[in-house]
Image (cartoon, rainbow, N blue to C red; front, side, top):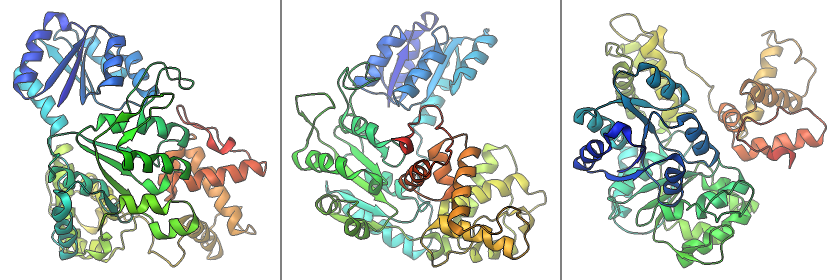
Length: 459
């Protein structure tokens, strides 16, 4: 645990540091936001505790602008309730009153470092995948983790890291699908000051941040093929070049990668380099879909019921027998992620002594033969019209037109946020961007991107 403290904290900085170090944290102290940002760019941290008298709103805005993601905790004198409210509104996750309480600081540190990534299972199919993961975890070999969206690929990556010789070092995850292509290189390799517009200072990338530990390249099949060649060199040579830099930097990381696609199909299509695939795919750990591990549905349901009952301060109700049957019959297109959302809703909606079928709202439809979820959704919408499910305005349109309207309406609903829209539509961010570029080229109005996103459809 690396803790960064910013500000004097009403003279209590020494006490807070001692408490944190006694709990195993490595503490770094900075006087102001500027020096704190320098530490985060060059060394990183897992948690920030900041004096409430500092400009927390501006600090968090700067974190967002530079894509630095970590929890921020505000600290101030116990009697200043208005400062606490301002800090939370500005984006702080918690407020700790001063003088510091040892148990409270310990609880915050524990919450950040708590093991919330346990894998719950009972089905032999999942046990087989875990056995394979444990077998290879002790090596430094690169591992490809495959499976549908929502099957728990990042959880498996964290499991491998915990079982590895690097467990006491950092685990750093990069979502290759969520970061625009022109920023992903900087995210991975870092950049020098002035390397591009917005590069206000040198910043290390995730390769350097994960030094000695594990780097997860999540949904690597979404990475642009031009960047793949630089990644291949970094893995082969064990050195990286910061964007705008002229001095190679040696790195020591263990690479894990995930994908929800068939990588051999991506190679045939020319969207993924074959040499990079074989470099990453020393071992493959394949995760079964939830519908292929039916014995896990009930145990996962109970796990999520307890989790969300506790977090919402509600009683933990058991599943009714008919509810178990209902859950087992469902095909779970969204896999464990969909089941978790379903059980969260059920905890909030249940009213009796058990969670009955009336509290279960299932989403999605059975998986069909069409591999394109957009076409499937568009066809479903058109079919509802043909069956009399009145959706005026769709009759007479082609499936392509319905697909276009579905994308544009979803994007408008998400206020232009491409990542959220792609998640709702069940497609990759790359597919969404390609569709939007097509519509832009055709002269169709496309909602502008949300703040912080780049409109790649217009590029």
